[in-house]
Length: 388
Image (cartoon, rainbow, N blue to C red; front, side):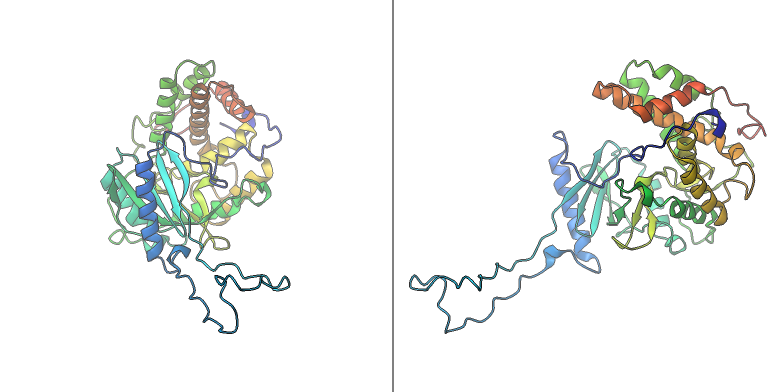
């Protein structure tokens, strides 16, 4: 998707993926047993944190009784003086469990300063273990939020990991979205070169293309929809490596990649005022670094992300030495194919959700589908990337 292929309507501040800014109640179909187990895991992790959650606090001891003051239970005691109201009862304010997400790709419960995530039952346990170890690696401490525990536990047949809670991006403040900070984090991740012997491994491939392929499969399974045709045609015109049907060709650029960047993958830690960190390492791995820039690029190409935000994101990535695009000049030869793939993934997900909810596509979803309809087959060179 080239920058000039689509018009740029006014950007929608609510066009970003949903984020846990407000927490809805869990769906009626949620596995309550699993949610309770996740709460116990998060509670245990919170209690082991350097600053335990409030539910560990001990209520203060009552003040010694004053023999000159009648006991409240004394029926002969006069009522409290109206100018001196009785003090409220002192008690600890326990941290309550909160369901942050309950989807097929993960269920997340927060308890105080800790978060427990149940990964899908069919997760590759060995690959997840390596990704956890990479997230905990000291060389990436300024980029990735490290887990609270180095290994996953098994709960109800699903691997469960525990993490510190961080403050997410505020969807109500689009002017404060940390596009530049996200770009710098990606550049640092892509440039990371820990000693091979020290980096856990072998690190699996970045799962971005596999995730795009799953989105298209989900749309196919959802049932017929008028928008499915252009989305499938755009998908068929992409190179095999983008469709997860072939590995990247020899000689292709590879770097440590996040694999699923969006604004919901950014949190401040410590919560409130700490620096931004990337979360969710389920798709972390070696791969084409342009993939991590592809979602903002696709949104920009579809007119969802405005030129100022895109310029701030791209400029910060380049200034931080990110290797996915040239340091100057046109970035689109490097971004075109991954951006097309992310546009297809976004459109396929939107269509599947619209079919399931029996609703029409909204304005942003329609813009992404329209972008797919304007795509033509990508000319390929031997590396599987667009011909320059």
